[in-house]
Length: 139
Image 1 (cartoon, rainbow, N blue to C red):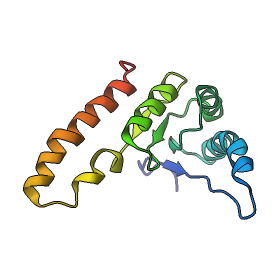
Image 2 (cartoon, rainbow, N blue to C red):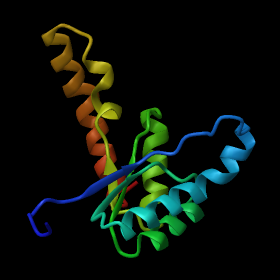
Image 3 (cartoon, rainbow, N blue to C red):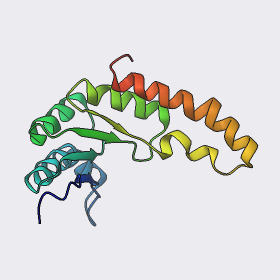
Image 4 (cartoon, helix red, strand yellow):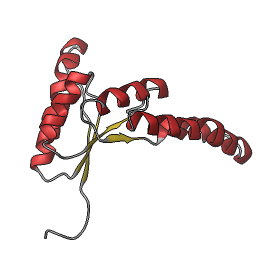
């Protein structure tokens, strides 16, 4: 049944194969992200959540593979500073934005409520603003 009004957001993750060297995986990674995007779009994805493919050139290849379907960079566990650089590069090569959760607030959860609120206010909120600036091309 089509047309139920549900949005299909597809998150693709790549993994190194058993027996595949780090070098082989690193060389294949940009193509894996772009090829995965193409497959997801062919299957009907309306928004893509993707790993940063490694460079501006690879981001442009993902944008081409997505054929107009918006794609966002997911943080994939990298530190905040790295994530901001990745988002800026990807957005400048066609990504529509970023999907972030843990990269903003993960280091604020293991504390008592007062400390958690302080960290969310003093660390997570500025990170969110910095991420918004990266998405909007102001970084």
